[in-house]
Image 1 (cartoon, rainbow, N blue to C red):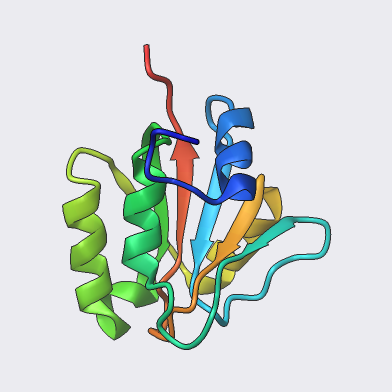
Image 2 (image 1 turned 90 degrees about the vertical axis):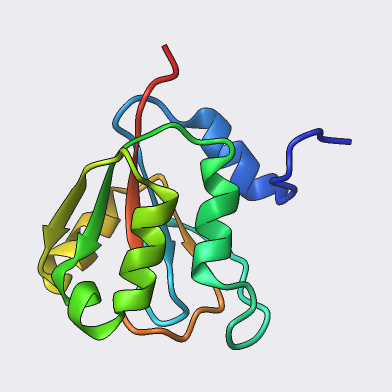
Length: 131
């Protein structure tokens, strides 16, 4: 059995295959997922699992050098924005309009769908290196 806390096989495999500057999207339940992008659907019911809980679990295995968020998050979901800042204290954030954010998801290795029902609770994690 795995020793780390990230138990989802599909999510763990995607992270293991990522290289420098590859991107992984962690999304609320409503973010549209572009055709052709791998979907890892963790949603069980509203608010299960929560967005920030999934981000925290992913960060145990993924080195992140940049995070991309929608500008609307700060205004519409300030608690989520603060939670991300707490989880990623030394990672720079790139803030883009939500429409641009959605366009960027088409370049991701995968989109991880959570059960989060908070507006704009989405982040693109850009992989760093561990050396």
